[in-house]
Every structure is written in structure tokens, then in C-alpha cells.
Length: 187
Image (cartoon, rainbow, N blue to C red):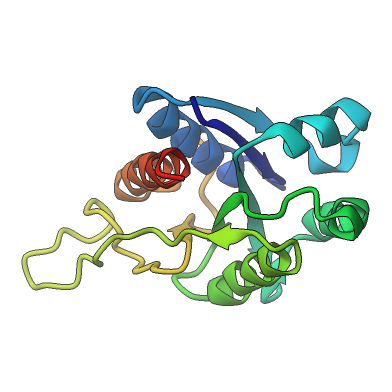
């Protein structure tokens, strides 16, 4: 059975909600998965769990065009795993949330891809087509934000975590979680 760890930071609770939706999709597909948060409180057991995982999914809000500083602290601290290539050949995936439809989300995903490549990991995109037809129901269809390289979700700046991200983004997160589990199991 695949062991998947979702390591993330959430500033206001919206990204945590996305992480929980990814986790739900993975668990429903039959894989073993766990959320690891907060990234700023990693201990030796946390690093050992990441070393034992088959798949690591990175998640962070996009702030000012990139991942949150708390996530960057985690990434910097992963240099010990990099030095020993502890994560080599593991599957990696990622997700981000921000207040705008774009707002630098791709920069955050690209940061995750670069982090994964530095660790010699194998990157898994969403494997999903966007909802980009006239028949699409804005904010309720799968992959409405149009993420290919990673999962992208949006929460209005004045919305609480109880209000956002919208249902379509959370369902996309569940499906993306299943995709990550499938790709990990296919190894």
C-alpha cells in the first residue's frame, strides 16, 4: 500500500481545507495517507515519516507570488534530506490556494516542482482537463482554475474557510488526491 504524506502550511485555514480534501480523495481510493502540519514544527519523527513515504504532496498558500515563508522554512530545512537524496524517486505533487484566480499560483507550483527536482523526485501533475467551455458552471466544475502542473484553488480575500474554497475546487482536490495515489501505486 502506498504511503502518502501531505506536508503543508495554511495561514488562515483555506489551504488546510484543500489539504483535507486531497487527503479525503486519497483515503477513499484506499491508500494510506496523513496530513503533516504545521511545517514549522517538524521533529525527527516527522522527517523519518517523510523518508518512509512513497509520495510527498506539498501545499502552501500563494503569498506575494510564491509559497508562504513558513513553507519555505520547511523547504530550506529539507536540505539534509537533499544531501543524502532521501527522497530520490519518490512521487511528488503540489497544491496552492490564493485570493485571486491567478496571482502567482503557477510560481508557487513551479517552486514545488523545483524543490522536487532538487530532491530527484518524480513530479505528478493533476492529469485533469480544465472546465473551459460555455457549459461550465463557474466555481462548481472540476479544475475550473485550470491547473495542469499542480492543483490550483481560489478563496476570496474576504471569505472565511467555512465559505471557501468553493465546492468545485474542493472536488478537484479530491480527484487530484486520487490521481496522486494512483501514480504512487503505479510505481
